Amino acid sequence: MTEKNQPAQQVSIKIDDATLKGRYANAMQVSHTKEEFILDFINLFPPQGVVNARVVTSPGHVKRIIAALQENVGKYEAQNGKIQESPAPQDMSYTVN
Image 1: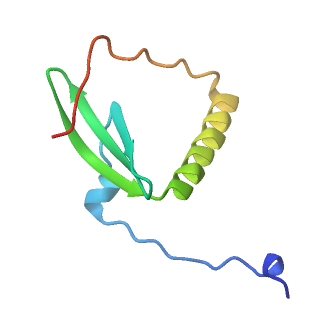
Image 2: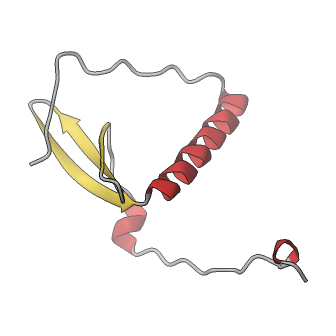
C-alpha cells in the first residue's frame, strides 16, 4: 500500500472550558522571524487595546491557515453573499508592549 492509499490517522482533540468560550478580537498584528510567525489578536477599544491571544506558528503552517481561511470565506460568501470589508482604523498605530 502506498502512502497515498493509507487511511488518514484519526486524532482526538480536547478543548478546555476557558478556550471553548473564545476571545473577541477586532484587530490583529502580525510579525515574523525566519522560523516563525507571531499572530497577536487584539481587542481594540481606543485609547487602549489588549492582546487576548497570541499564536506562534511555522511559516508552512501560516500558508495552510491562509488557504483554510480563503476556502471558508468563499463558502460563507456562497451562502450569505459578499462580505464587505471593514475600513481600517484611521490614524491609529499601536505597538505590543
